[in-house]
Image 1: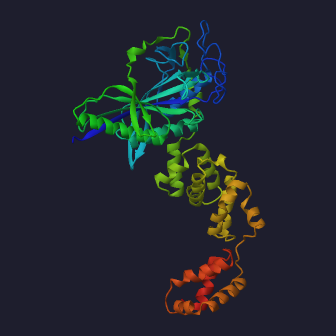
Image 2 (image 1 turned 90 degrees about the vertical axis):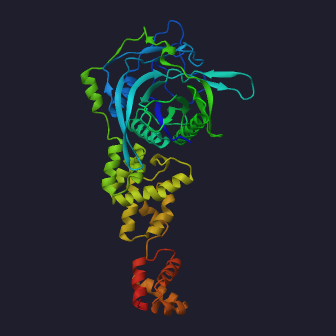
Image 3 (image 1 turned 180 degrees about the horizontal axis):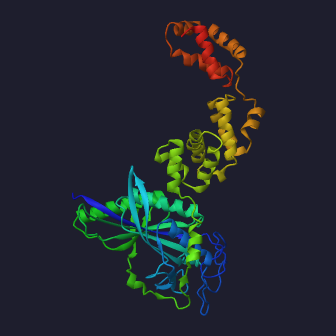
Length: 478
């Protein structure tokens, strides 16, 4: 079998979280009753004139700035003519030869290796409606609520060579648009979705193979699986002496296969021309500089700062910055308590509880404040409770909103550090276990854990372990 190399480019569609749609004043809102959030403009009725949404242009420019793009301060909307069953106008308003943003890049890290992924262009367009195919009738319905929703399409260069690299790039983009606040990032609702262009070629060749487009994949896991499946399918075709056909394919996550949807169109098939109803977008130097100043610290530099702060490896620091809400939570708590310990609680019990409850690792999913987490760490450091008890009560603290101090007091969990009180219990346990005591005196130091465990059991975990160990050393001389 020949050795092949994959060549992958992504077209990422990002719905912008504006108040209204791109060319009309209809609310930009998900989940309403079908065909209730529409007007003459997003219905494409004759004579209705579109008006560009300035907030959408602002948001799209922020995305371009954050991805190192050149911003075209004069850009043009174009009509993309094509049969759209879910766009009544029969064309999409997009951008073609004069897009808003061009020639950017992102840096990704895969298996410790940094790589630069080029961004060809970022252009604005209005989303289409949604086709709903009945499973019980031979009929399809169209919901036009989504028609006119503002999108940016981020088109990468074909610089990725594996599904893993594609997912790393996609996650980096996701972090950027959610940190900027220009997209809610809800992949299930289609706010962030991608088409993957996949081809393969013999290793060492510089000639591109025939590509296929995988349409509208809307989860990181499915992007990886879909690309891997498509690479394997194309390899099988070439190994069998067949040809790869340029086409659009859909990924079936249940069957883990890709299936043909339609032949792939080329740009000339869309018959682009400047939209006669829309003036060019003009962005002044002053406005562009003002928007540039709005860019917050983005995931990658923030991750590198967190690594320096905590000493964590990149894979763990990356979790802390996966969403801005979590990164802000960590940063607030880390100013009040040991940063490494704050990170350990987030990556440990907090992450485990989120996974067990099928929740995203977002502070808005619970009521614990960063101040409460810092307080818990200080209480453990002071010896008021043990680390074990802190872990045992963590879920209650996470969801109840009660402060650690109040919870510990109301549940009488404060650690026993009075040596005279603990000494009585230690003496009692030694008396009940004379053989083990003699063996420990004789050098079987593994039995220390047995005695500490017995004391902790009798005190319900409240005895100070350091005091218990000191007393056992005094009495059994190990």
